[in-house]
Length: 390
Image 1 (cartoon, helix red, strand yellow):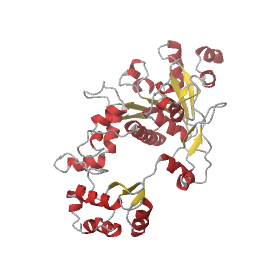
Image 2: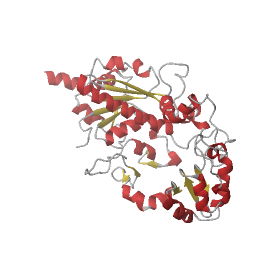
Image 3: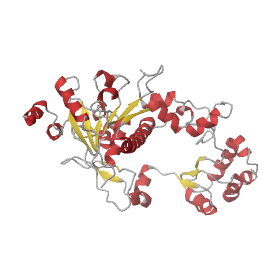
């Protein structure tokens, strides 16, 4: 039995942040029902990365919405809205990611629905919170990376701000939302009442930077200074970075600079015994390390550095990673294609429970595929409910 089996989660979200949180709850055993607009559905059904589609939906939609069911209901229609409210009354969790105020306009804000279901845990995702001058701005990943200062940490000194090539804010916010929902569910076991969990893309991406922001706030608020040579962390000293070798790349994380100089045969680096200079002169030192590493292969340097306790690694492409025995040992790939379709590979939930099987996830649902069944199962049709009473 998975930890959340028996829990019913309603997913009112689109795209990534909210749906990724619902996906993780589904991975942990919850029954997740997507509430989608008839004929349109979650916008990510039509947002295809690199034009990849499967059975009429974007491949990334399949990845984000595995293990879910889909109900197509129009909340602007009074009958459908009544069905939605009857479903909410029987749910454990509701997740929404509209701009602040939209759910309230539909009569589905937290204050509205807690009267229907006091035990409901209500999760809200916004771009910038519910107060302040940015409330109305689009809550989009690239915009949040740009506004949060994150883009100024990436890339080398002298380069323009450089965002991370991932939907980092969305994904991290989804993780925070799951943390809040699970915490509220635990509290409910004691109090018998649910609660309202609020997260925003901005606060989540700021939390992701807590280490460097703390440094900034306690260091005279001096702007971070990116390394001009192979920057990997604005606040860490040499040798921290990725370096080119004769046949590839080598990542150097932790280790004594002077000891590394001895191991790679560089007298200039070996002479760097003043640890304070490892930061104040890091670009100069890193260039000296880089020049020496060009003289040998990655495997050669690893054979010298790893046994000496230097924290270092090869730098893999996805092709090499997926072919590696280390990756295969994780058993991290699964096929979530719908019946009759070609294979559709995606990753698994990274959380494992010792001794338990890891069956493949159910495919993402077609739009509205489960509407009739769920309407009947949960008694959402008013006429059916009246007939049952008689």
